[in-house]
Length: 260
Image (cartoon, rainbow, N blue to C red; front, top):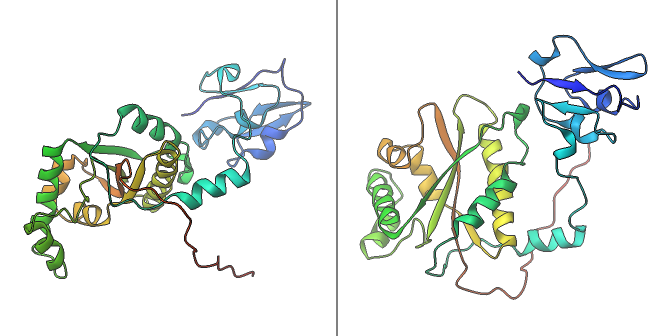
């Protein structure tokens, strides 16, 4: 149960924390903010109150707000647009390992992706190493042999190709609770953050759709990955350094928006 505390000596009474709380866990008591009694039962632990307070008067679960990273506008709209537009789905990778430091740094950013009710339930599985990746691809292909419409992929594998992971040096899956309606969206958002973070480091990604689909159908593939019972892999990407350089940004369809 999250615990919110207000330092009355710092509180300036601006009521920003009261206004921002999505679960109505705070109220004004006189000219100071205060937690609503027993509100911990409904507190999401989202930290909105901590983030919005200009006086660092709000703490959550005992964490000193003075020790938290100060928020700032890190990129311009133009910089973000260029980052988003230059991200490509990479299917030709260099034969070079992905540094663990880069993966961990990207995951550190991905954990800030929004999740339903602030559950923060997304967890990750990474597979690397030539032998493990080949064994994984073989398992996926073996499962595909019983799936109609996958004959082309099976034939490509039997000809020595890797149509599943494109010989990527690493594949990373995001999994979450199978009994929560927004788990798929939570994983997709986290993977999106993960991809952009890796792109900023010069690493390329591509959704591993074939592997992901089979992982949700095959007990053998689930067991290989170690997906815990009660959870599902809802996102997965190949990761590696692009073997090719891209020089321009192809057009995309215009955004389609209906005003209601």
